[in-house]
Image (cartoon, rainbow, N blue to C red; front, top):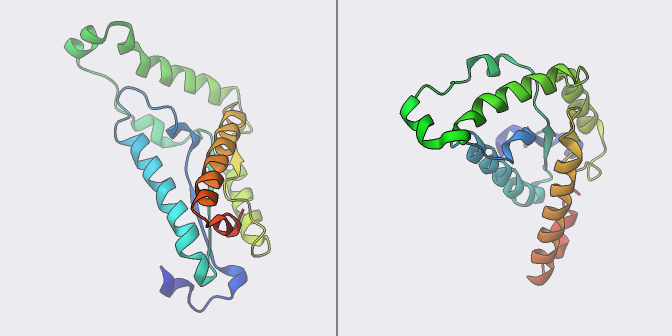
Length: 173
């Protein structure tokens, strides 16, 4: 990754990942999906500190769910014995999919173009002035995600301050 950025001027060295806000609430049958999103967040957090010394900024864009073909290929539960053992909880995947579909239909502004616009705006921002976790959501999840991000930032600030390395908070805010 460093070799890709080596010749770029400092104002163009950026690493931005898109991590959907839907990873936060883990539900039945999301055993691989949610942890992979959390792992990507941890990688970007590490890149934020490790690559900053090379003049590379790192950040995350957190959109809510976006209507894409991904949802068409989702596996639906097909294990009657397991579903019977889970009783009402067995309905969660189906209800979740129906609810998500309704939420996306009710939020026509939730489009890929909005995420692309935020990405372009981030890339155009001067070095050192980019937010670390912008939330792009028009489905109603955004305010909760921003609240969770504030709690995470406060906890990170406290840990880094207690270890005497609070300056790491200023890598890119």
